[in-house]
Image 1 (tube, rainbow, N blue to C red):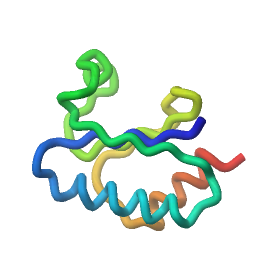
Image 2: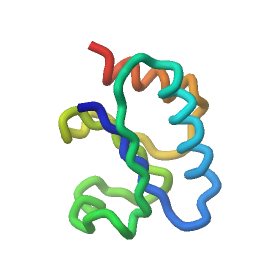
Image 3: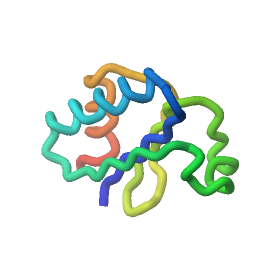
Image 4: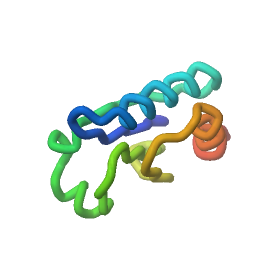
Length: 90
């Protein structure tokens, strides 16, 4: 299963933009992708520490619950679409 996990923080404009741009990119692909958005306070603290999350938005691309890519920051829909193509299309 393909999944994108977006870790955010309160009142983060960049996080809202990233979420919107990821959804735009998903509408342009044929891949089945689940999107999960969580405030970083809701995520397991050990996961945050292991993944060295220190800025937001942090976006994880997972295949069968295995992280295949991690990005930090906000990008245009075309960039997210490229990563979707790279990691989720077989």
